[in-house]
Length: 171
Image (cartoon, rainbow, N blue to C red; front, side):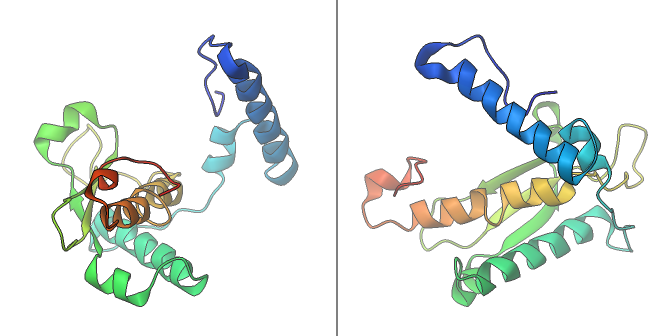
């Protein structure tokens, strides 16, 4: 499966760009993971065994590790981590039909109080915790640090109210 899907949109060279990105990604996976696709590469990543806290605890630890890494390299402050934490909760029933395994949300109310990372705790076979997804670290980084949570805390903290609600990295 391609990393970027070619939607037959040749405008602005999108198809050429998409093909080039996929080619680079596949070359990197073959070189470093000795696999042909990114899916095969992700499947080779080690997964923890959930403890008593289940998958929510696994995701919470990944968030803590990512936020600590981002703090150490200087892109988040201790204050942000303390005053605007990410909590992990089960995906509510009303979101399950439109989510495959996770969702992220933050209230735009100021001062910011934190975001919520919703995760699917079980598979369709029953209420028992499902296995840790192979891509859980990637998903966590995408949703929290350095992903949506970090982006949202930056844009919602802007002094110009109009720009707070526009997702654009240059702000």
